[in-house]
Length: 284
Image (cartoon, rainbow, N blue to C red; front, side):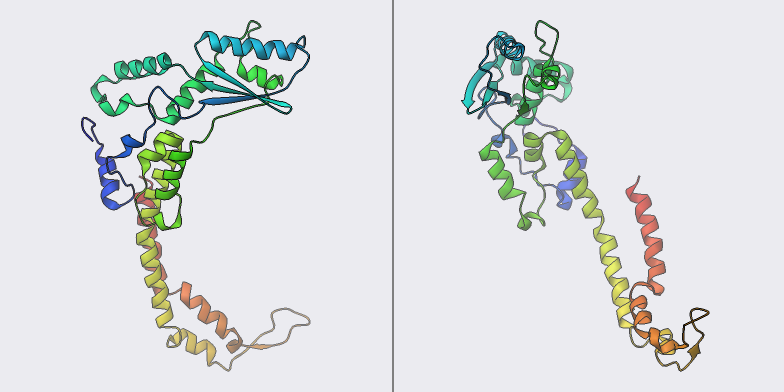
């Protein structure tokens, strides 16, 4: 990616197949100034009585947003009112400027675009810090049932692209498009799936060694001296309780002994030692 400094850790994860970064993620970003739909949606119940306090607060809050150059679209559906909110251009210009000033050394042309997740976080912050005349902000208005709900919308095109390249079973053996995930869902979700992919990759060696240990036990399933001693024994064992229990033969536990050998054999000790070293390595 021109002008963008890639971290060595990302290059390592890409080399191992944990992530898939082909340099085309920037093209999937939305235009900076024109949202694909609404940045945020507020939902309220329809209030016919305009003298009610809830209606006044609802109207006042929407007017405060319009003073900040937010574009608000009102849609009435039965007993609910939906307010589609779009952030103004200057807010995202200011965000980019502050980001460039605070991190000028790592600034690149890639950051000229504002991801959807970032747009939503910026708008979310402003909505929560926009008070009305009484001093109540959006959280207070939600508690007072002035607004019933708030949410952001999925975008069909990016969602479809992620579904095709990431959220399907056939993509399990491919690297994750982590930049596209970050742009759509945000850093927290992307970091979680990046860690999950790395942890899953680290589970490959224990899985392979575990299979070898299992096959080792399976190869000695019938030839093990311990199994032969148990299964071919004529020894009679004492009752398992003081009253009401009968004597039993040791050979009756043959199936249990064979099953135990699959998971508890000489190779299990080596596997336990390996897992102790592996867990220490992973936790560092």
